[in-house]
Amino acid sequence: MRREKELGVLLLGCGAAAKMHSRVLRRIGGVRLSYASRDGARSAALCRMFGGRRAFGSYESGLGDDSSDIVLIATPTVVHCALALQALDAGRHVIVEKPAFMSSAEADSVGATASAAGKRVMVAENYFYKPIARYLRRAIRSGDLGEIRFVTLDATKRQKVDGWRAVPSLSGGGALFEGGVHWMSFAANIGLDIDCVEAFRTGGGPGRDRSSLVVLRYACGAVGTIAHSWEIAAPLGHLRRSKIQGTHGAVTFESNGLAR
Image 1 (cartoon, rainbow, N blue to C red):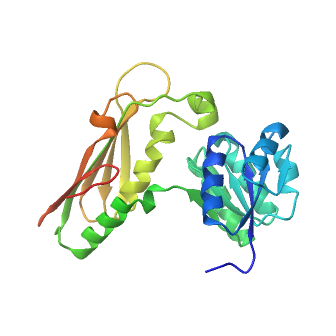
Image 2 (cartoon, one colour):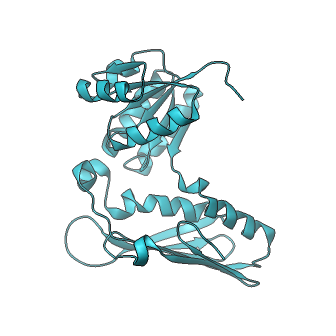
């Protein structure tokens, strides 16, 4: 189904995330892409690479252009909130890269502003849409597993980070905040409501966390755990086994895909 008109999308930030979103948006079609960066050469380069409409040498100049319908924020986390508020004030819908904001207070502020403006804010979190997540929601909803007792997620791997993602004051935190947000979303969207969450940092020493254990209590009485690490190697190229166990059956699955 073709849209009556193309949507104007302004990307703030011109790093790896902006390139990824540009490739996907170009494949989907029906969009006009523009780019804004603090470095005008970078925004111009991406604009050429993806056949964009315009390039801007500052975020403010991009937001001042009224041709965009949606602003996609793909900058360091520390400026997400300020840019989202500016975009909403300019009358745009907002898509913001994960992690969305530095604190829950920032999220509340953006949510309230969006409601007052009659605009939508969406977090670019993809784990909700994983085929395995859809499969698990169907399995739990069907009742074939009975009453769910345990949700066990293995999210351990070795991963290095550099650039601004390695600086907590810019990224918002360590491995759990930057990467574990995917698995928190996954655990919250398998068809069970979460009552409370507690996380434990594992290992000692100063600096940002590299490994954590998250414990979730679901409203149905089930308990979930997420073992998350960027310093523990997974075998055979990140293969990890997770499972959901109920009183009538269980599903064991590779954390990113195959289930039985």
